Image (cartoon, rainbow, N blue to C red):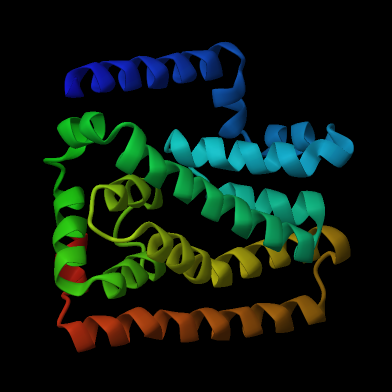
Length: 225
């Protein structure tokens, strides 16, 4: 019965990827300018469209960093930051759910021997939530791989969701806000001041994983190899 579920999950994933390619959705998700124009064309529905597109990007392991910038430009600094954070969290959660509940056997068979998956699994076993915080704040592992890898670990669902939400907030707000501010007000002296403040905030955030690594005895350089 286990293999039947694996086969069904593989067929579903393949069908979704095929549909995304045939409809042009896959190409659109990797075209920032095209994505921005496409989202704006939906008017009031654009928020829902953006939300679903961001989730799809996370599930299909496509680059999602540009979505935050697109959100800031398309929806404005504040709304863009909020919706990009919520969409990124929803996308990360969707990938986690696929990995843990819907296609666990398939993903484990395909990626279980991947050294990144093993490092994350070992890290969670030894350090629990602290390891999740560290890897969310320091990009030692690709974001899209993390989402699936954590679904195979023993970390609790709600811990994963809440930590992902909180740790992604600084970057989401800063990048969406700055992109939206530039699109709205252009380059100015005040923009430079905001960049300086954003830099200080990111610097402060960068100290958190260093503190965790030092306290837990985690070698960040070894993780990245």
